[in-house]
Length: 83
Image 1: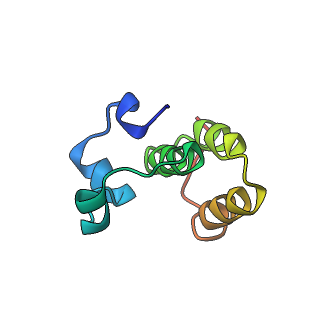
Image 2: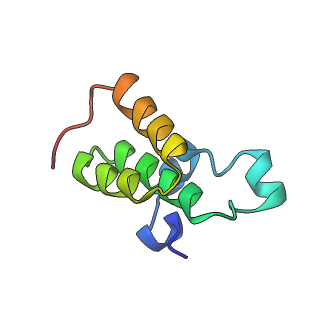
């Protein structure tokens, strides 16, 4: 299963995606690949790499979840640039 840790996140990036929250530090990483793809989309949003962000959003198989992740990145943020 591909996870955010395969992409060498910095401590600042771990904080941005929320993996330092008690929920994750207590119970561990998400169990589904879709959740990991959403975290990767968050990571690439933070890195301002819209192409990679879109790549991971499009890998999410649950269409409702995919729409929510996509909406949150496009609706609430305009600073992402195509890289």
